Image (cartoon, rainbow, N blue to C red; front, side, top):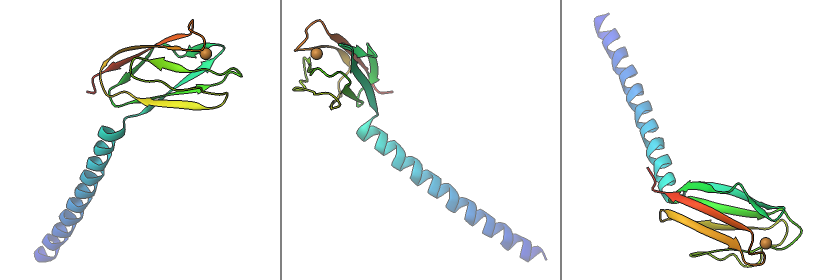
Length: 121
Ligand SMILES: [Cu+2]
C-alpha cells in the first residue's frame, strides 16, 4: 500500500518535471525570438501626413510605413531612405540604436515625422 502510493508520487513528480522543462524551453525560444526581431509598428501615410506621429519604439523594432494616398511618397531620415512608395505599398526600416530620428517626405518636404527609439528593457 505504502509502496504503491510512493511510486504514484514519483510518477506525478516525473510528469511535473517534464512539464516544467517544456515550459522552460518554450520560454527560452520566445525570448530568443524577441531579442532577434522586435516588433513591427505600423505608420500610415495618409492625407499627406504621417499617422501616428511621433512614434515611440524600442531598439530592435521595425517601423512599417504604408502609403494610403494616391500620390507617391518617400520617407527619408538620417539613416534610412525609402525610395518612392506608391499607393498601397510599404517600406520597412529596423531601428537598432536608441535616439530621436526626424524624417520627412522628400517629395513633399512639409510632411515631417519623428521616430523615438528607446533602449530595449
Ligand atoms: Cu509625400
